Length: 342
Image (cartoon, rainbow, N blue to C red; front, side):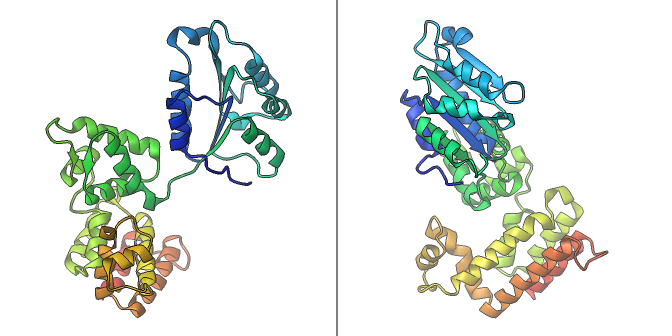
């Protein structure tokens, strides 16, 4: 299916906050956070509180037909400028022909919000997609990639006038992952815990509020590997082996693979002696982010990096049971760390 062009969460929210409402919002995708944010804003702001009883309707795709949704959207508002019709679980609607007819001629007095979660419209329905775009807003809410989480965390906190250091950002990203609803919930908990005179998130705050050890975590493991600190790396791996909930091979293999893959690419940077040059070559957000790669270039030869990448692939296969009937994950992690550091 062709992607909706130039439609972003930020752009939609800017229009809504300016009071510019489209007749149709079709919100779809794997990330429910943005869908819920847009839907909730419309539900709370498109109508005055006293107008909602008669002019705001919430339907569920598993309980209604497309024809019933279209009929609800065609009604006129009662003593209000507009009405709002919200369809949750829109992915469960069958036979969308009647909706397609509505999209071709939507009511200007209606704001119809379709919440289609855990997927997108069937790519074969090109005409249906085209009709939605012409009627209003078609938005795909995509899961954030792990590498984009630090930027999301920093932006979320900055909007709330809270600062955070890079280490704390990575600790939170590694601990919570890309579930934005859970992530923002944890960030809100951290924000509430901060004293008024110190609006800054530190590793100690993360440890206290989220429960991530500031000494034994993926950030410190990668740092120990980058700097070839054998003792610290083995300390952390042992900690994870004794505390499986704190970390596992399934979590750290992607992290290590990503680092060494980028390190291999860094070897081909035209200006690999320059931190700025490596940052630009790797398309990093700022030169500071290239610091670990500069250290890696000094501590690992290109041949060793290639061998490490191959070893990570081997351990990944073994962790999934391929050619490995008995070795537990903790032992596989120790084997990999030993290979990397020796």
